[in-house]
Image (tube, helix red, strand yellow):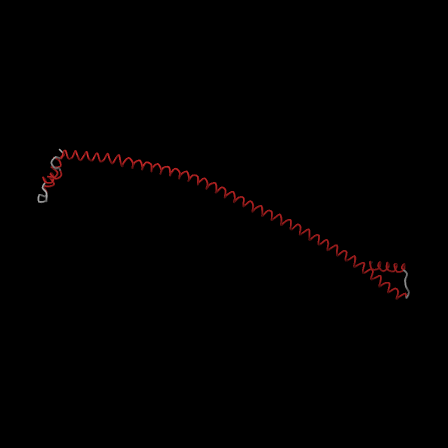
Length: 191
């Protein structure tokens, strides 16, 4: 039946061009030589044997290799995913650590600023206290200098008064007279 179908289709094709190198019969006889049934069966059996040999020797081992490779790829993907998750976790931890260190650094800077402010205030207080002490010392020295100057002036005045009284009176005065004159002179200056 197949032979007849092919023969008829070849005849239709060959009827269009009868001047070609083949006629329909030549083509069919070349395509299906005598004894086609046994030759076709033999070729079919040879093909099946070749298919089974290739299947057993090549397909199964190649399939096994491909399956092993697929399993390895899946395992590698799984390991990569696990590694990615671990890296993301470590990244989050390191970002948290960086943030914590940044906050510590800010706290240290704030503490250093506060400490420098306290030190500044202490230095200013010490400087003010030193200025006050120096001022009081200067006032005390001035007061002492006034007292010393007043005493020196008094003693000069006494000496001048003694000399002047000796000149005026022409005699030497006793200590009692001298003290009386000085007291009177000082009272006169004070008023």
